[in-house]
Length: 486
Image (cartoon, rainbow, N blue to C red; front, side, top):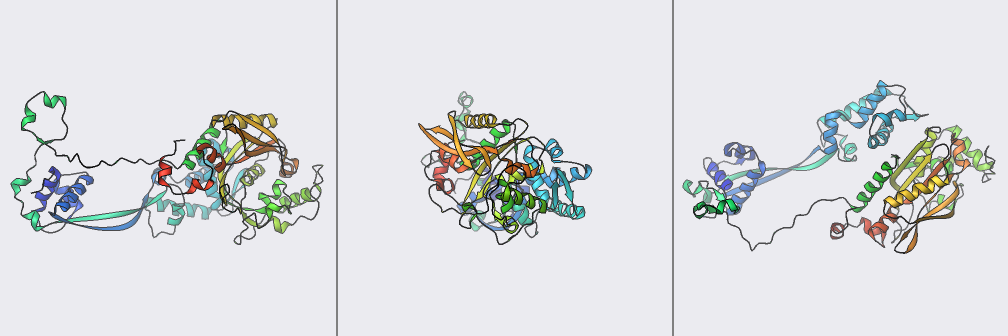
């Protein structure tokens, strides 16, 4: 008879009392086990010896993830925000930031916008509160009882760690003829010693003990532990640095208008970057309505400078072009809208998010990449404050040598480019400056606005020592395992 472990002996002895198939629950109850792993392991062992026949069936199901478990106990993020707004009709973004965690405020407001809630002048408005309450109630019911058949599954699947799709395996075991032929006395459980200790050797009891056999010729498997992707680890590192510096994170939509993406930033409508060759314009939505007053202010600024003492760009400003739908080409489109909604409230915000440009894929370019964006708006904000902030950020990233040099951008004046010293060379990593009056005055902003932006992938290449940006997104497990922990 093959050498059996004690769990295998107990399981086979129990199964010999009935020839029908045994379920996992029946094995656990009969063998007086609470750990499923013990039963499954014993079943596999007996199956390998030919003493039982194992059958497996599997079905796909959905369960709650880590965030889903939290939502089930304390409520969905949008539900908690909506309850707060209903209880405080005059609530503003400042109230949300004061009563919710920093990592909840931005995404939570984004979820409410998707339900039809708008922000006007920093306050929340809704044309149909009942539909919002009904939608949130349906989402709450889904969290209580998730199902693959529910139309809400695709919504929750797109949200991080809310739900997980799992494969549920059902196993049954049936004793074979070989198993039935094993005498019961050979299935008696015995005490086996798995580890020789100093205490054991101090007496003679080890001489009569049974030791668990080990095949020392077999190769041992090296455990592989999970870890974050280098890009995600870098994002978390950058996020923590900005949070340490007193900034709040901003999360917004990918789909924007050409007006907010470009016109608001005083980029002329005939600028080459606005052509189809450089920007992803959308067929759906092809047009997105913009407030007529905002369009009129941009028109005045672009054509003759409005009331800013600028001469503008001249020519004729097209409101139709301004309302074209597109995938944002930079995250500045979101920070400028945040400023427009909070024109008089001092702020320090940042964003780390995806942007899209029609680039040919090569060693230094991708059509979809990440941008790090930040702004400081407060009385007395100036270029010295901007440079000090950037130097502090790069010093915390491990690059203490930073310099700036003059540059040109359509929406900042003065403008500068930021360079860090790496391996004895100066590398340009981003642009910065102070928003021009043509950008801020149409939005009612009175204080200076310091702004900067940089490419995350370029910084990642620097940190990881890469010379090809595509390496960041190739599924090379060996390379990923060998990357340093950031």
